[in-house]
Length: 125
Picture 1 (cartoon, rainbow, N blue to C red):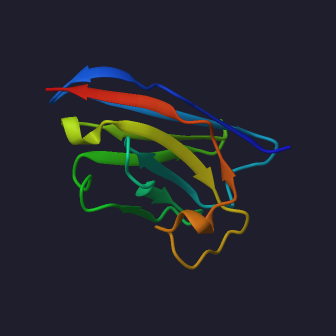
Picture 2 (picture 1 turned 30 degrees about the vertical axis):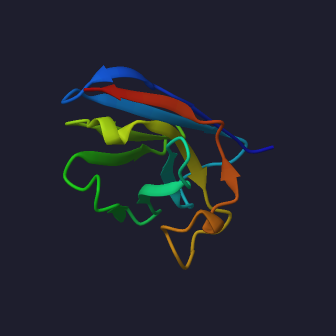
């Protein structure tokens, strides 16, 4: 059974930093796409960042230059380093994993079959 568990969320002031972690069990992440999504109250879930098995990465325009995704395949864990946080970054952040090494749309939630339970990030102004 594949499980993804996020951690590292919390309350931070605007301009601060947080690092989220997503530990996966039940499969190795080395050959799959891992991604972060977020969902703010009253809004749809949106793509934040992805990391594919060939070390390629991608970011939403809203976080580009501020967030960095990385993975440690030996620990089966993916990270999201978030700098220069803004109040509009407040959301529940979800980790996701693809079921195939190759997916068509990295930014679509439908491309991912495994999800964590989410971790709350709150940025105060």
